[in-house]
Every structure is written in C-alpha cells, then in structure tokens.
Image (tube, rainbow, N blue to C red; front, top):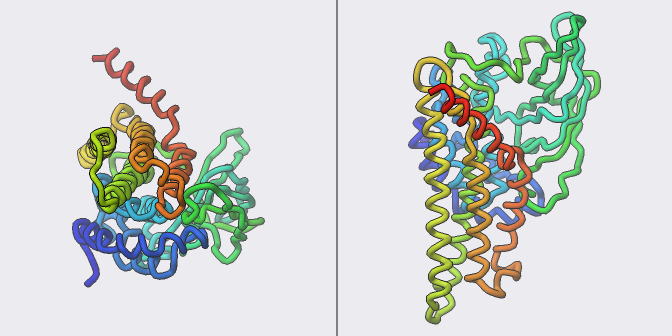
Length: 367
C-alpha cells in the first residue's frame, strides 16, 4: 500500500531502517545508494515530502521531515544525506509555473538534486538561456531523475540575477571526484554542462524574497535545508545505540564511570533532538500562518549546536567503548568520519550564530 499521509510516510521510512543498515557498507563502498534502498525510499515517498497538497503531495511539516532524516541517519548518515537532498524536490518544483510543472513533473516521483555553487554562467537568448558551468557537491546525483544548477545572468543594466535551472539530464557530465573521509554514500560528486539550452520556464529566482501568497513550504528560499540538522542527531543516536549494544554484550558489570558517560551521552542526544525540533517547529508555525516568517524565526543556530552536541556524544561513547572504539569492526570510526562530513556543510558552520545574534539584537532593540 502506497503511503499517502505524512504519518504513513514516516512509518514506512522507519520500517526501512534494518534494510538501510544492512546496505550501509555497500553504499559506502560504491559511494551511492544501493538500488534496493533507493527503490524502497522512492516507494515510501521519502523524496516527495516537499510537494504541496495542491499538487497531490503530502506537504510534510519540517518537524516530520527532520524526524524522517534523523531516523535514516540512525542507520546510515550517507543515506540520510541523500534523503535530505532529494526530499527538497518539491521545494524546487513548486516554484515552477503550472505549465512547466506539468512538463517536468508529470508524476511527483522524480527525485531532483542540484548544487548552486560555484555559480555557472547563463546567457539570455530567445526563449531561455545558454548555460555552461561546473558545480561541486552534487549530492544525490546518482539517484536523481532531474538535476538543477545555479547560474548567474549578467544583464546589460549591470544587475546580476541568480537562477536555479533544470538542466537537460542527457547533457550532464559527471566527474568521479567524490573521494572523501565521511558521508561517502551521498554521491556528492561534481557535474558540468557545456553550452546547453534551458527554457526560461525551467528556471526560478534562486534568491527570491519571501512570499506570503504561496504554499507554506515555498514561502522562504532556505526552507529545504533545516531538516539537515536531523543528521547530526541521528549520528549521535547511532553512537549511543552502538555503545549500548556493545556494553550489554560484554557480559560483565559496568562501572559507575562508564555508566555516567553513557548517561551523559543519552541526555545530550535528547537535548540535541529537543533543540532541533523546537527550532523547526517555530518555522512550521510561521510558514503555516499568514505572512512570511521573520528573520528572527529563520535565523536558527540549532544545526551547528546539534553538531557540537553530537561531537560530545561521540567523545563520551568513545570513552565507554575504550580501546574497542579504534577497531573498524565496531563501526564507531564510520560515525566519526560521517560527522566530519556533516560538519563541512554550511548549515553546520558556527558562522550561523552571527545571524542569530544580529536578529536577536534587532528584535530586542525594537521591542
């Protein structure tokens, strides 16, 4: 039975955790989702959660999307990264005109990925744009049906427009350069096009101003990225689960020091989850109301702090595991590597706190 509601999709994804865990080693080795995990996630409609109800989508809240991503990350962070990126499909598709939407998304089951950096160059021509460029970090590209790219249009009046463009898939060249420490399964390799034509209707303003007259999930350009915080929480939970299982199977009494370390790790995971979900819950409330979310609501520092919490959780779990933590057989070292990969993404940078501080002062100064 095809899941239709957000609750049914969440339950379907939870049921996939054993499969995701079973295929994690293969996904890491091949640097992409395994075919059967990808097919199962498609069947669960994990990639369709950003589509509006108006277009027949589940229009899943950011809270539930974050829960979904965390659930996958408790089995494999690389797979969760694919889910986060490909779940943004609806966020982008909903920016299209009805005509272009019908052309590109005759079915909602068309997972879409893309990168906007570095920006390519687009030249305006009759009916659209000629585009050339190469993009890094094309996460999920080996599992995507459609691919976006970001490009700048330099106009005669001196202004620059940054667009997101649906690229002709048959013209995309993939570059096998995703050789990294962590998140190997995310297939975040580079890709390029050379002088391809993109119809004007297959583009959107990448940095459009927030809008109140659209569906909730497209009111603000940054909405697709908040669920990524769930990956750090999922990695931390995975570390606690692994450490708990290891401790229970040792067959000997656990000393108070290790109990305290494990208890601290468990508490930190709860704190990270509560922090992240509280933040996206506030955004859900704002986009569900009239108007647009304020800068203060959107300026979240939850993701970098969740990553800091996850680092501490891994540190405490390593102390509980002792010398066993360094053996590949425990699986712990992969969690360390994957968290390093998460930490490299802009959503987790400590610079996010600059906006939080700025909007906090602005809000207090006008109150």
